[in-house]
Image (cartoon, rainbow, N blue to C red; front, side, top):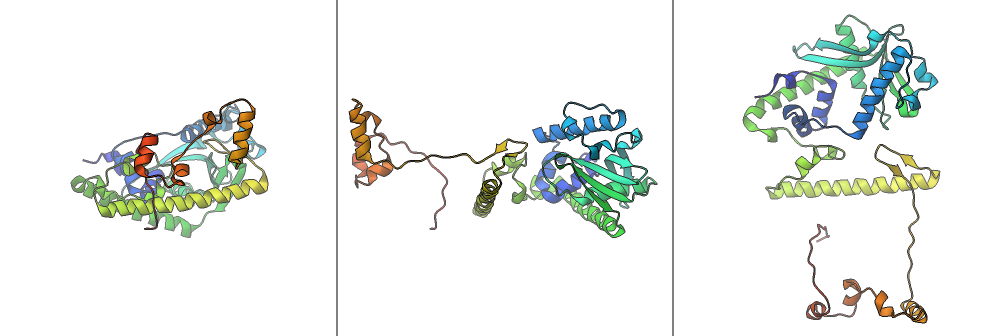
Length: 321
C-alpha cells in the first residue's frame, strides 16, 4: 500500500520521477532518504542566508557569499523569506512550494543556488509562480541566484511558459500515479531505470549491484558501460585541455582538479646493471621480472609455473571479438 504522502506533490518529486523512476521509487515509495556533503552544505547556506536577510547576522559559512548583489536583499519582509505555500492542481493533488525569497516591491521570485551548475530548471520557478498565483499574488519576475558565481539570472514572467509548466506537471503526475497504482501488483520493476542518470545517484549501487538475470539485461549493462566510458574519456580530455590552456585549479564539492606532472623513464638495462655493480651491490636484488617480459622469451606455461607462483584473478575486459 502506497503511503498518502507519496501522492502529495512537489517540484523535487516531479523532477526526480522524470529523471529516473527507480530513484523516485527508492526515495519516496521506500522512504530511503539520503544526504550528501553538497546537500548538507546547501541546507546550511540557505538557513544562514535566511537569517542574514532578516536580521543582518552573517553566519560563518555564508560569509563567502555575502556580496553587494546579495546584500541588496537585506531587510526584506521576513514573511517572504523561505515562504511555504500550499496549492492544488486541477487534478486535486496538493502541492507544497518553499520559496527562498519573494521580493514584494518588485514581485520577484528568487531561488538561491549553492552548487557549481549554472543552468537550473526554470520550471521550478514557474511552479513557485503558480503557487503564488493560487494564493492571490501575481509575480512578475523570476530569478535564479548562483551564489558561487555571484550571478543572478532574471526572467520576465511568461504566461505561455507557465502553462507549459502546468501541462508538464499534469503529465508527470499522471504517469507517476499510474506507476504507483501498478506498483501495488507489479512491484518495483514497474519503476523504470534510467542508466544515464546513475552518476552521482545515491541509489546507483542498489540498481547496478543487483544480479543480472538475463542475457538481454547483461547486454543493456554492457552498453551502458560503453556509453559511460566514452563520455568519461571525452570529459577527461576536455577538462585536461581546459586546465592546460588556463593553468587553473578547479575546486569542486568533492576536491581539487589540477594538472600534475607524471615522470617516466625508459632505462638502458645494461647501463643500469653496470651502474648498480659500480655501487658494490648485486643487480639481481633490483631486478623485477614480469609475465610480459618473460613471455618475450617464449617460455612455456610449464616452465613459468616452475619459475614462480601463478595467481589467478579475473578482470572485466572488452575486446573487438
